Amino acid sequence: MMKKTILLSLAISLLFIICCAAYFVRLLNEEFANTVEALIYLVPPLIAVIAGIYAVSKYQITNITGKTLALFTIGFLSWFIAEVLWAILKNILLIDAFPSCADIFYLAAYFFIFAGLITYLKISYIAWNVKKVIIAVILFLFLGNIVGYYGVYEAYDTTASFLENFFSIVYGVADLFLVFILVIALIMATEYHTGKIFLTWLFILFGFIFMISADILFAVYYEEYEEWLAPYRYMDFLWMASYLCFGYALFRLGFVVQYFKEKTLPTLSPRGKKKPRPRGK
Image (tube, rainbow, N blue to C red; front, side, top):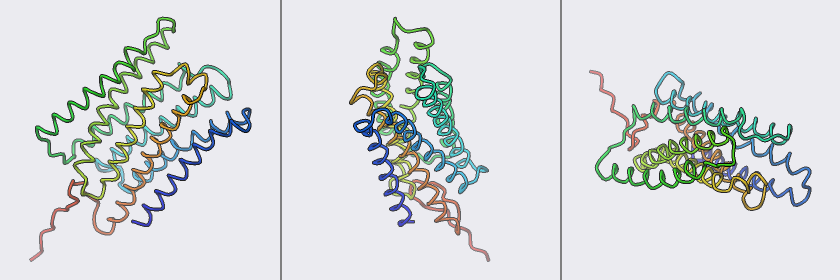
């Protein structure tokens, strides 16, 4: 499993470097750049979808963890469809992609991922105590205030249309759900720090950090991003890093299941311990 993890790390890192490098094609040929950037940007969310399908195939959908992974994968697929629609509208049809049908799929992803997390919490092994609750509440209030201010309050524009304001504010509210997921992912990562799935939850945490950071920057610098000005257009790197983190997390989770397949499915306990089997007489 160690060899697979190392190869996966190298592949994801190389893919991220290639994706970022593609954005500098504009310096050589600006006409060709839009097509390259649009296509290369679709690779990371596709990787997340493939990784989700791989993890689900290892766990099977008959148990809670498998259902959780399936909901996560549907969420990633929804994001991928949204990215494809955005690319078609903006780069092929040359029309404004916001608001559009792509936003329906963007927002649907939040629902499926949140539903997946709630499903997983039913079997989670979080040893809640006063300290963890206080830390979780403080983090949520701190990040929630930032997201709420820039994503909801500042999102309203008196010069924009009703639909533009509606979707902008809904995205801000959806990001508040992402903040909740981020806080839970942080608790999970700390809870499982000695288990086999520590890296899975750590990279899921990184994925949501990158995602929320990109969403906040997009809300603040929307006009500059739409005009494709540097360095604002490079916030795409954060979204791509987010998708690749999700992909790494679920691919590695699949490796863990494969590692244990001759024995038993991992219980996802924080200590990586399995219940001893009773001896036959």
